[in-house]
Image 1: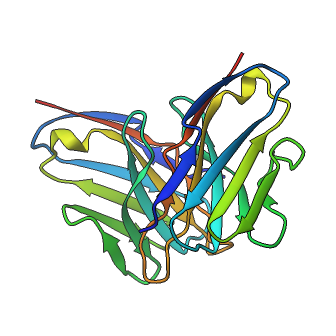
Image 2: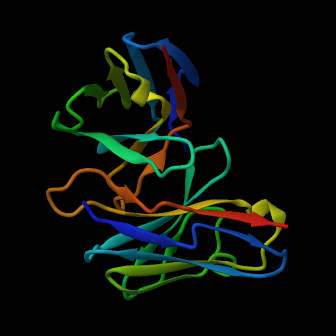
Length: 110
Length: 115
């Protein structure tokens, strides 16, 4: 079952902050976050592993609540380049495959 | 991270025909994945391509429709067979990270239009 993301879409002014949430119905081993710009492939941002380890982008932070099977991506002081669609990808630890969330479309304006 | 060359980048095909999409990786990888992304939608996993064995398909996808080859650790193909307009979509291959690596890497995608 596909993880559900919220909000579906958000518009920000440059410099504002945003939080994107990802909720899964399954127990998770890790959560990935990706950004996809129109017409391009998804690009890896961050991975959060069960147990608290995080690896990824310097200017983006995220949290992972293992008990609630939820993750949140925090975008601070947004820049125009942050615009795109954000997907969480969840890994239940079986076969290393990712199931992608419903997506959140983010637009940053001047 | 791995670099993936995917081709063709786009194609327009007649219904009833087949198209083979290729992905070449610049290093050996254990697992390769094939995804479909319909316009404005999320990515849906079609199958996992395993070297030396048959691909593992997700629910709703079958080998007769989406045959996959994985002849070695750097290459895989996905064929979309007997196409209909409903197969119009973007198809992406992806590889898992190397040991100690981070996220998955994606090919640039194949935009398929079936007319």
